[in-house]
Length: 523
Ligand SMILES: Cc1cc2nc3c(=O)[nH]c(=O)nc-3n(C[C@H](O)[C@H](O)[C@H](O)COP(=O)(O)OP(=O)(O)OC[C@H]3O[C@@H](n4cnc5c(N)ncnc54)[C@H](O)[C@@H]3O)c2cc1C
Image (cartoon, rainbow, N blue to C red):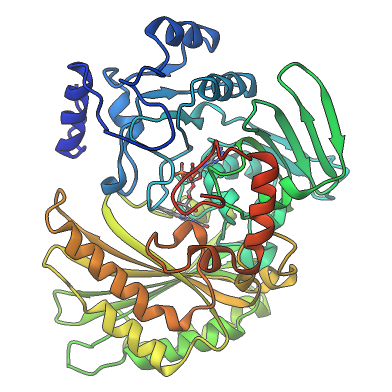
């Protein structure tokens, strides 16, 4: 009955439910199972019937799989999971939750690093069944066309559909990340330097608001249809702006996103190079390599994007640490922009452990080679780095932290997403992501990962916080989707000068804070 990959706590939780206990002793302002305010079994049954019984309960076999978060240590246990297949079912669910003052959580893939998509005892809306993809090549809003996507769709599904039309869209690198939370927080991509962030490409969103109304929001305004069918149209585009970086789980349940799509390039080249930090002969090369990489990140043409990865793992040949460059070129092999990277390919080839160019026919072919992360325990933090950030001190900090192993079973990995290019062409207040995105070249995420089932958790978290604080001086903000829950100033770190407007929009559309999550606007 139980998925063997799950931590033992899950099985225990299920037993609690089977015995009729309330799992969490939650004392916030919402109503939970076991309290007299909680809907009776008859009321729950009537609700379930109204949404075609798309309900998963703790004793259902599917439950364990649905509640598991990518970062397993953040897994929690909703009391009721709803898997709507239409906007109407989402509306009915919000109205039901509102009527009984149930805490809602919204989950698309469960990749959120600090568990904002779940809550013990909540009514969880799982968006996986809202995953249709519609391509429109004759859009009046964008010459290359547009695509409408259900919130629960994975990016690989969208890429595959678009590839058939010779089109691409700005989306996530990992295949299992879904459109919902990724986009609402900003969304960087292997193609961001060519086409901007995901939110820069957003044309329209459809969402269900706290009172069960359906809203369709774009730069032209907002159309709201109340549950009883009244339509109100305004030119206020605040809700659309808030959906462009203000974060998931905050303004409503977003059911559909419409993005600009782009004509596919004639090719896609991938460059991979692996350098150690310390050669097997004892020569330390990490600083020289990172200095060269910094120069490339600050000056490379927009056709190139991709990732800088580091870790401090020792290889069998005695070399220590890795600096991995995984860059992608949007365009054919025989171009000046592709050749720009030959200087990196030819940079001390005698040091590199691996180096290759691969010439793909399409973005989809390249994307298929990306390997998704497994489930893990991790502590993540992020900084946005501008042209002042790539100092010798930063390089030293990066190299030092790779060698911090608080316990044997842990490793510190860093993944920097190369931004800049078109991301810098958008005004700092045109979308609601942190303004720092518009001058940054790297969104650098560090992840302290460890094995085990919760032992020494506090030690690991303390170490994760130290890592965050060590890197903080080199950042000008933090990416909301990859940041830490322990910054001293989450409003400023995640949204900077955009926070106050976000809060005003939150107050307008959700004055009672029906949608709430950890370090989310209006919390
Ligand atoms: C392996 C991995 C790879 C990643 N790769 C990238 C990448 O390439 N680029 C990048 O920018 N980020 C990346 N991220 C970070 C990613 O953007 C965040 O984890 C993001 O929150 C994932 O969104 P989700 O909907 O898939 O996850 P979820 O955990 O389901 O949701 C995240 C948040 O959004 C809310 N939410 C989800 N769906 C909706 C909805 N329909 N309406 C309203 N709120 C909603 C949730 O309540 C939660 O607060 C990656 C993360 C992981 C773990």
